[in-house]
Image 1 (cartoon, rainbow, N blue to C red):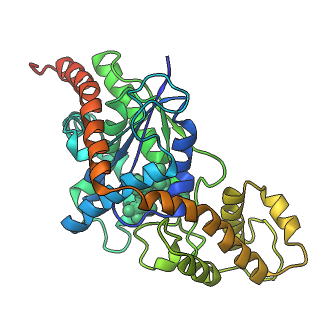
Image 2: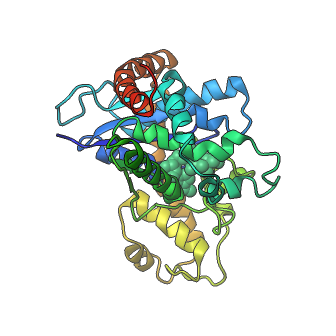
Length: 337
Ligand code: AQP
């Protein structure tokens, strides 16, 4: 029997190549090998303020991105097999996620959540006092998302590793307290592209919510914007193209080049021996454009109506799976189901 994978992206802004390389590209590769469930996690997105109309628009946009990236639209992936999978759906259309989250909240510790770097990062500016309780509790909802489906593997970027660890801890704790219920999930993090750094600051990850648009290459950026952003990307001192930890900005750009060209960083170093940043950056922009152009064509060919239909169908397919697990959990904690 195939193992199951689950992952999702928040519709909290414009998706960027970090989201693609860290997460979605791996989903596409894994979708035939696993029973795949991919979610647009809109309930996570509202842990920071969102404009309702924009949230609706972004939710559809993200589902289109999944499809344009190559997630098989209507089940029955290329290798045949069970036509139920892959499934894509919207988190808020399956209320079992928040029900399970509530139960998991009762076995989660404040001290565990206080340790989460993402919460610390997101409250760095304004402090945690005024932060939403939902932002603090986000990792427990993510644990519920994962555990609800008997997920064995969670393909995510490196920044989400800590959250998957919490899901593992909560699964073990619940199983210990109430008997074998949850599969213990594992994070799947691919070496290259596991953490794409900001173009304006190689010390921080590329992010949808970074203030400057020059932080990221968005998946729907046009050619000119991509060229401009790469040209403006910060670089390190010196003029040689070398792949080294001492040159974090260049290392990040070489990693991006490598990921979109299927070349190794060493090969790229060789290609640019004796050349400078100008040549390297100009060609890097073209490599990214070469990938994004056909992707954007597929994206534009999808209508909102057909995507909403796929999402609705997906929610209908996952609900029985979610309900079965939730009923088991409710029974174990002593609820009458
Ligand atoms: N810079 C990144 N490099 C590699 N992977 C990344 N991911 C995010 N940023 C990078 C991966 O993308 C998936 C979806 O992320 P998310 O929507 O859950 O939110 P996030 O991790 O918080 O990503 P962002 O882009 O920084 O969004 P905001 O700004 O809204 O918080 C995850 O698998 C993540 O690891």
